[in-house]
Image 1 (tube, chains in turn purple, blue):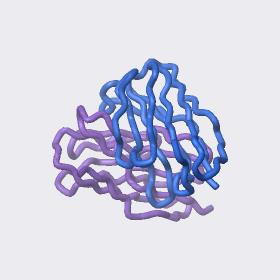
Image 2 (cartoon, chains in turn blue, purple; image 1 turned 180 degrees about the vertical axis):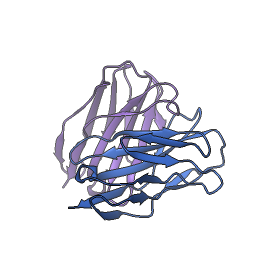
Image 3 (tube, chains in turn brown, blue; image 1 turned 120 degrees about the vertical axis):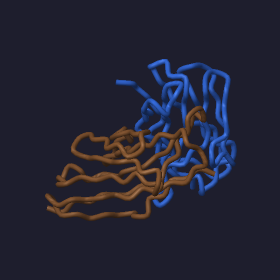
Image 4 (cartoon, one colour; image 1 turned 90 degrees about the vertical axis):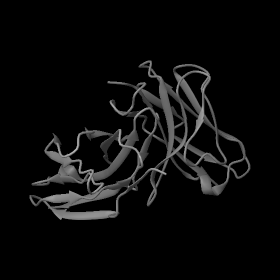
Length: 113
Length: 114
């Protein structure tokens, strides 16, 4: 079946440095969309960014991600992290007309001053 | 901003007891979802619904039932609660084509089964 894998449970980065959170997926479908959701402490998850176009960079709030269907990846990157970026990040997959969102295991991003 | 409200926010239940988690959304979304969140597993889909009267099994439906009596309300029911169902439960709503739209989540219900 369809699945999303986030291999890092915890990523710790010093403020001002870059970060990349890994996301890979498996699906037999070609009509798919990908998402990054962010969940701050004691809050609900909310959408950070979305993409369905191969090799096109998507940006929001200083974060960016590019869908690479050739490598089945949708990694999240930021060039310079801030303390306020500390949160739990989820990668997710949606297949068109299936009506559901499949999430990865989540990666906790911790920023050190 | 779409509003999704869950109740209760915290619940302590006994093993073997019945638990009902409620969710209400005020944005006339067709689709609603129940997820549970556990460290190391992320958000896992339990049940979802395309509209009033419909429920669909998600990836981990065993031990759970769902009910969608109206467009606004979607309940998750644990008929015989077990300690393994201790978790944080999130309800979410979204439009008809969620591949093009985002989900709106409630703030979660923390359930402890003793």
